Amino acid sequence: MTDAVLDLDGVLSTRDTFATLLVEAARRSPVMGARSAPALARWLRAGHDVPRHAAASREVAHSLLRGMPEPMYDALARDVGARLGRIASRRSMLEVAAGLRREGAHIVVATGSEQRLASAFLAAAGVEHDLLLASTLRWTPTGPVFERHIRGASKLTAIREAGIPIERRRFWTDSFDDYPTAQAAASVVLVAPSRHSAARYRASPVPFELLLR
Picture 1 (tube, one colour):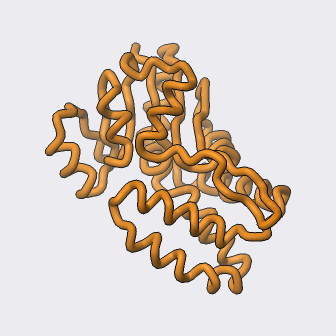
Picture 2 (picture 1 turned 90 degrees about the horizontal axis):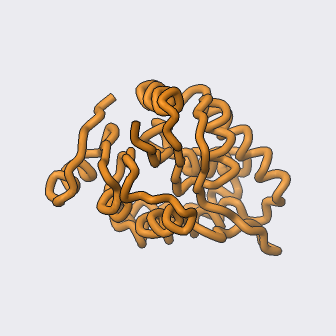
């Protein structure tokens, strides 16, 4: 039995949960969605550059959620997270997570998605876990902004600050964004990766197992 760290988007979920929430926010407020078009374009152009993509996603979130009170965001996160947990969970990884739980493994879910959204997804999908490490928001007079955004190297930092010995953990990810954590982990499983992520891992010194479904 090996304790585990599981990513959420692309691993437990087949969709980007926070991007789905932003799309839903734009659908509910078309005017705000139209005003956010320039930020959305910068987000798309950021490509695989992790710092640029992370910064652009924060800009999009601030733009689309501008003026949204916290209770309204809470309701949106619960709604979107629960819906995605029901319709967009990766069945093979639900089986993996259930098997780890039966074996008595300690399970950490570490994700760049937002805390309340991720929590609603995990509850609806039935993923039992010991700790959730996720991005957090704080509210300002103009709306929410990221307080902590767990992307790239900051995910590894969050894991270590939580006292998780990643060097003794099996890490499940889909993305080369998580390379710092993959480098530190005892072993890596790459789950249904994009061509870009698969090629980058193959070119790296980090050994991994591949789960394609």
